[in-house]
Length: 375
Image (cartoon, rainbow, N blue to C red; front, side):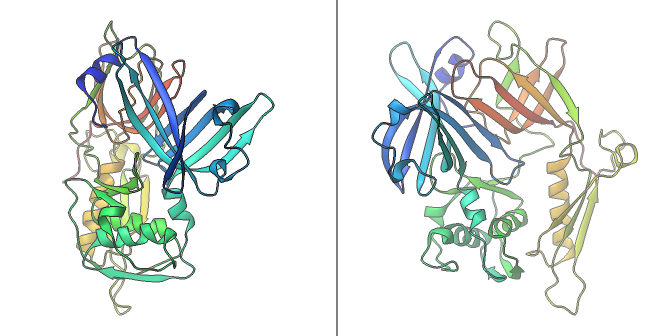
């Protein structure tokens, strides 16, 4: 959860005045701050591009910026905020996404519709023109290098400036990377390096860096927020759907041998716990195949398979909240959900949609965590 004050957390459970606005950037220079007439920010840890921004902006609020490079999908970025204006006039906001414009539409009602995606889309679009070999003593340095090159003088500039490119969160342990040939997909190469570290990599919500974070704990996560009914609760209405979508109870990680003389290594892990809701003998095997060519031994592939299995277990479910959105929540956060029938469970957020108007609905897509990893 994004750090906010206790005052903020108390206020989101009560009637309050919300604020939302967007900063426009041309390159790295902020050129204007405008109010938002409508829209939402969607954050999804299961998608390649984590943040999607959809905005409605009144044309009068952007007067003077039409027809130039400020509002075109070429070099414009938006930084979106939502927060609370307290009764004493003080304001506390949360950054929701920093994203590149991909589409702008004007209509006859003098409204602009804007769509934007975070910088991982730009990185993914910067494909290598040919296969490439990466190696080095630090996977984090390689991630920083590959992430910065889309804006460098050449597509393979090889410049490493980790502090300016990455925000590495506590718990991530760096590792060496053997010589590995990767295909043209730059973002996939970055994801493979993150898999090797049992980490997730995604665009920062409030600056131009990528965040490298430990994979969420799916076994015993610590809840950061409670979703419940009652006078001080945050849940007014709910709908609970359980689905097999995005649930895998078997994982095969396929590596790459250091030499063509040897067979490529692989590691396989599956849910063999009889009491688990995704036990292979009752749920059936639903297998995720993952290529991680930076792994060159069966032991490394097996470790990665177990790590990916931990991410994938647990039934996928959706919980829709109609009031009291907490914009500080993030994908990967654990929340306690207490329903009126007395059911209480801990869930990890896969995705959420944060409205930018008071009338908008706040929705969470979550995954149960009542799982046991196989020995």
